[in-house]
Image 1 (cartoon, rainbow, N blue to C red):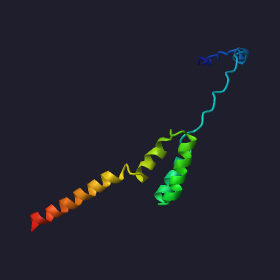
Image 2: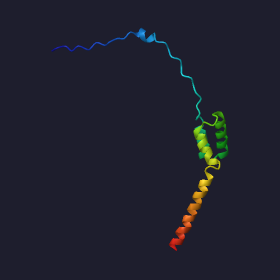
Image 3: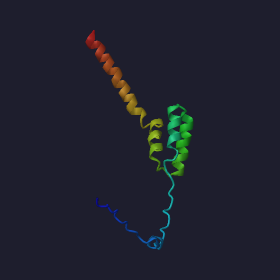
Length: 103
């Protein structure tokens, strides 16, 4: 039987790796969305005053760049109330029309 020879491994010099200059760490940027979890928690628990306070604080810290805080804020301010009132009126209207068609 012929003996099988194992392939020899190529060894690279370790000194070549250690001679490379180390790169500086990337600068750490502030996390703009760090309190999203807290905003969400207050909102789903219907603790709207605490939610508004966290939103206000977050928007001040980020100079208005926190996307989720702006999104939830729109639910509190007048941006969403008008379309909801319109939808409710349409639902009531369709219910009235549906009743008149049936009777």
